[in-house]
Amino acid sequence: MFSDFPLEARVENTNLCNASCVICPHGRMTRPKGVMAVDQFKTIVDECGFRTVWSMHLYQLTTL
Ligand code: SF4
Image (cartoon, rainbow, N blue to C red):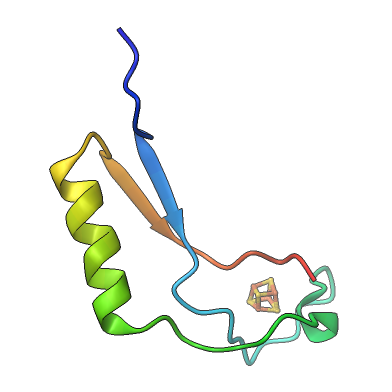
């Protein structure tokens, strides 16, 4: 039986970065840059914890 909720969550809690890896388009990113509000992050963690999520990755989309 399949879950109606993801088993894994990837959360971009910030899109800030002070590195400049040559393979990364981060420097050309046009999206607004910032940090997720702590309350919003807690809401995501709580919902994932109460549901079927067994793995959460904090990461940054490298989309422009
Ligand atoms: S987002 Fe990741 S890959 Fe891109 S510059 Fe920063 S550390 Fe490097």
